Image 1 (cartoon, rainbow, N blue to C red):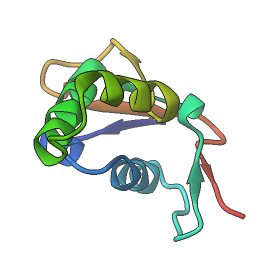
Image 2 (cartoon, rainbow, N blue to C red):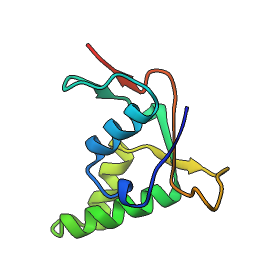
Image 3 (tube, one colour):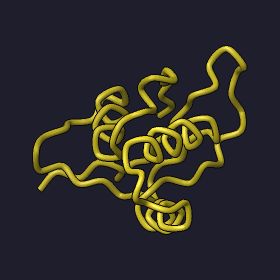
Image 4 (tube, rainbow, N blue to C red):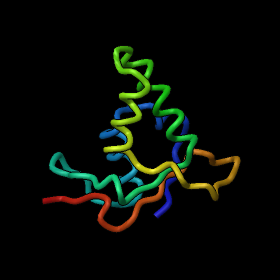
Amino acid sequence: MRVILTKEECRQSLSDLCDLVAERAGLKVTDETKYDPKKWRISLNVQSEYFSYFGEKYLEVTPEELGMLWASYGPKANVEDFSPDEPYVAEVEEGFAVNP
């Protein structure tokens, strides 16, 4: 399922971004929902906005630390087939959002 985001929507916590993407994909989201970072992908534009937001909000985190966090918990930024009019894209696979 493909989800189109705005630039502003990319600038929030990773958990809030996951919630938003899951809801837009029509998935059930509760306080107990867990996300599998291997089950979603984003466009590089989403990652760039998130990194910018994170760097502004958490000044004590180095770019290297952010990279390690993203590699562990973030999606892959490899969605390439998107329109210039809709550059902020996320794609989710089955199993992205899991509810106990």
